Length: 118
Image 1 (cartoon, rainbow, N blue to C red):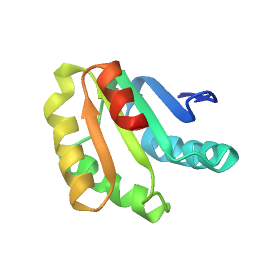
Image 2 (image 1 turned 90 degrees about the horizontal axis):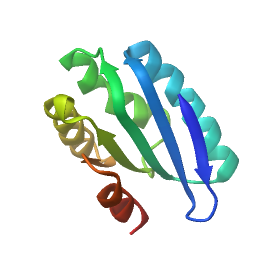
Image 3 (image 1 turned 120 degrees about the vertical axis):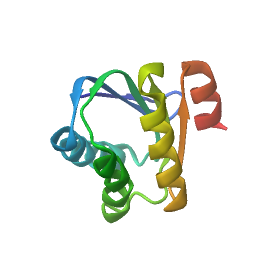
Image 4 (image 1 turned 120 degrees about the horizontal axis):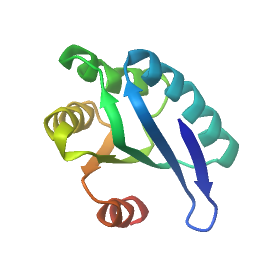
């Protein structure tokens, strides 16, 4: 995972390329918490356009619970996805929203940033 901080617009970009399984999710969560604490930033753009999604439905359902347990309730997350994974990310968005997380999925970067920075 490549993580960068946009100081001018005050948001974090997390780009993941390759396999996205539960191990990658758990590692990424630890890294993101560190970066969010360092910059005192709670706006995150996850660029997952180049992931090979290796999560089962029950694991996708579990990810929002991990985010909540890590104390990430007040984070605004825009998630960029590849259209081949649209159903899985739509499911994640629904589950996350039902659990009180502020998550929106996008197929294009500009609308994602517009929403994230609004």
